[in-house]
Image (cartoon, rainbow, N blue to C red; front, side):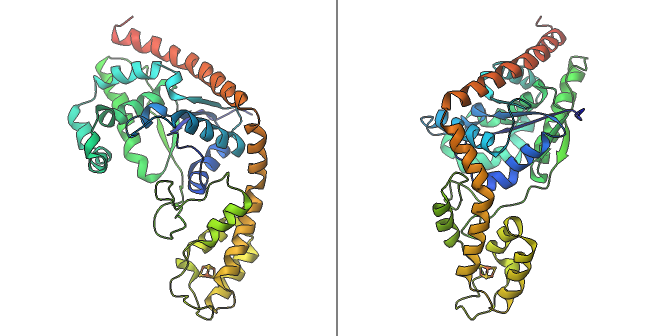
Length: 328
Ligand code: SF4
């Protein structure tokens, strides 16, 4: 089947992935493979901008790759690799930084957020983050980048940088990436309040056992109006119901929707039902993960092979870039 073009996406190595990562990105990565030539990158250099220690970096990279593969990213079809294994990206980052006004970087809301979050470590990497991200995308001449609406400004930055480069060096070697806006569901953690995240410890890991998963589900915060079993609830404001909508059958969703409102079902039973369905959904993933984890060398070999294929594309782009700039 002829594919529609090339897609690039990168994610920081955060170790074992959770349901938020899965529903927000990984499922989409897997689906895109049918339509596009996909390049998926584990952006370890970007991770350096915020890490206090890099002791777990390699292990986190491995665990994330393992989850991606177990979830269905097909290395024989897509390129999956580690950012730092393609050094051309740092060269392009430097060159692009010459056409990036400093004020534009300091004005970016994401930079200001980071300064607030880690005032003790406002490093240059944080400032140059969007330039490195642009280098990632354009190095592989990706026509499309899947982004959630909240990431749209980053891609607009990349597009402007490409225009500046092409104008400045009177060339057209770099391609303006198009946004492929995807509906990224905001997955709320088990606290029922905040976005699911490891740092908030409100997450459910994909690789957890069925028992651990059920335990986490049983801790989920529900509609606070249901103090007693006999209190009617409102599923529309309950996070458990949001998960039912993803992992349960339409009939079960309809039942919970009706029975919760008239206290016909208790939260414990409701959560058990959801945990069972979630576990059923994750079972094939867990089996594949266990199988792949039995041979860690193979995971590293897949990442090496991906880097080799990525380097070939990157070097071809850099030869054009160097020629356009006058460096070759
Ligand atoms: Fe939430 Fe289910 Fe309890 Fe209703 S019955 S409040 S949907 S956990």
